[in-house]
Image 1: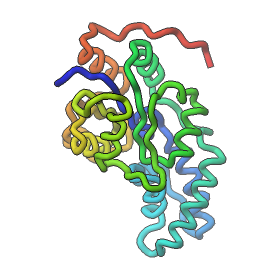
Image 2: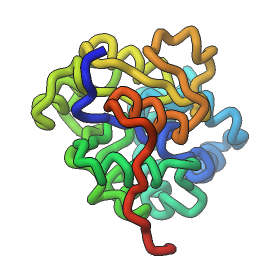
Image 3: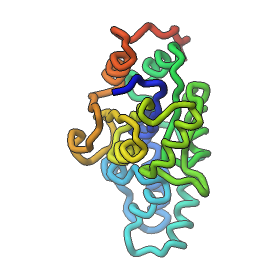
Image 4: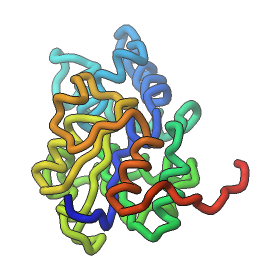
Length: 233
């Protein structure tokens, strides 16, 4: 594998566990529609194709596209009102990002989450300054697994796909990386329903602490350097 010169992270299921807040907003919408709420486990199985696809999957096949669009708008309004009430960073996330920042490695986000929500959540979690670039759901922009997402990020970061690592939790992330020509790493703590070893990632790790050790090895470091200490939040 060529040396890594940049790292692109998926957001939901990779850096953050956002299902509790997604489920709360989605279930409020379902109740308005006269439908039964879903458990967080059920919502987890629906995540990955973007917010509108999440709503469409939750509603089922009996609703028209116009109806889905209306509920999607309701979902966004509810979710944007409380996007991080119960959302949390996964263990090791902040330490890994601090380390990569401390050695000057460019970082980016590539998510199918709507751009406004993505930037709001990054800001609320004090992560906005961590990433050089953010690719998220926006009118006229493709979503993962379209390789244009990662190829554009590589261009903006000044790297080639072969030297840009994609870190995610799902087959969508791996498929996007493969199509773009990027190496990929899957963390096992996320929302993927398929066996992680079957996804075709270059590396599968248990969590972000192990991801940090793998990245350090690719960079030729013996271990994670101590990143600058953060003040308690």
